[in-house]
Length: 255
Ligand code: BGC
Image (tube, rainbow, N blue to C red; front, side, top):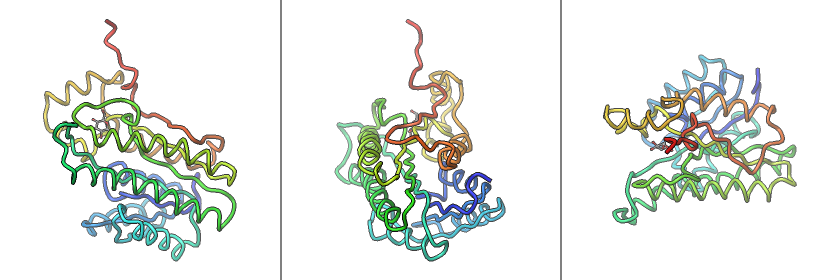
């Protein structure tokens, strides 16, 4: 198994891409720590799914936008499994609001959940990796929009642009400690974050037409890349982004 006995924290692990990562990691023998804020039931299901897949999992009540709560997740990893091997900063939201209509509150929430949690999660994980010795890995679930504009979703793009530089800079700073920081940049994935598109046949057709592979990704297709990156088979990869986007960023109508 690719992740046998490795301990992995997955923020936002009870839905969407996060839930797929939890099950995929568990199926490869990982111990997984998941957070929940409002949905203990979904987390319970997630834990059961992870155990059914062959791994171990625990749920922690935590709001990832608060550093104390991220610390709680790390503590749960140490209490239950004795160490941390991989942090997956996956939690993310979007407001689908433009630069003209975004409120201060919307901006703050997106930045806190997407970027602040990834920044301080990286800091806490790195300190733990240094304390326990032997290096470690931080994987950030970013987006094609760390680099590619999405008009009408400006705060999200700004937060993902920040994640881009988090991976670049923290990866450079932490390299000497054998700690790697890698972003995964999914394109459009069939998850709750894209519900408004999935539920609107016209919007969905337009999105599919913009993707060279002609369809959204299944969350499993992102989770598989996470497993690969966490497996030790990608040991020289750091300070960069692996885009998993069906070609959407390179799409061209050939005019
Ligand atoms: C965003 C979606 C968008 C997709 C492709 C994702 O990161 O969350 O809203 O459809 O990128 O553009």
